[in-house]
Structures are given as structure tokens and as C-alpha cells.
Length: 93
Image (cartoon, rainbow, N blue to C red; front, side, top):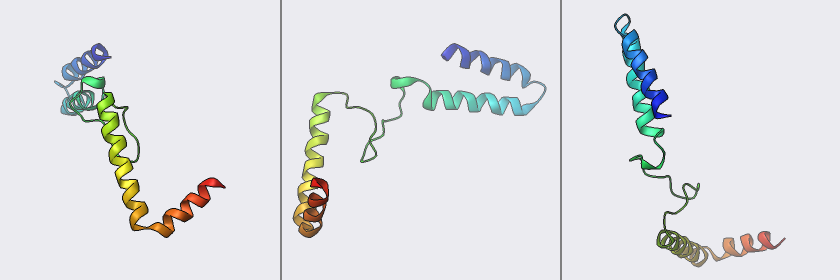
């Protein structure tokens, strides 16, 4: 993948001597490759939160996320007992 991106960027740079828009395209291709296309070695942190995200990198990370989620669920049940009971009833149906 990296070879394709680099050769495409080189072609855009060569074409850029006739049209400056190709220079911009080459910069955009390199930016997108560095930002999203380098796999797990990228400096972009994995997505986290309720929407999901990347799998935990270690068992300790998994335990930390699981414990944090359990803490928030206990807090929710403690602060909203009626809503928690309603959700539990719907879950058993």
C-alpha cells in the first residue's frame, strides 16, 4: 500500500510542474495516508467510548474499561432506580 501511495504522490509531483493543483493533490494524498492508512503504527489514537472502537491492546486495558463501565452502570442504577427497573423488565421480555 505504501509503495502505491508513494508512486502516486511522485506522479502527482511530476505533473505538478504544469498545474499547481496536482501539488495540492499530492499533499492531500500524503496527509490522508499518514493520518489513516498506516495501520496500527499510526499516531492516531483508537476510538473509544460507547460506540465501540478498537479491541483492547492488553488484558489490563480490557479490565480497566470493564471496571469503569461497571462503575457507571452501578451509578446509573443508584441514581435512577425506576428507570433501571424498567430497563431490566424490558430486557427479560
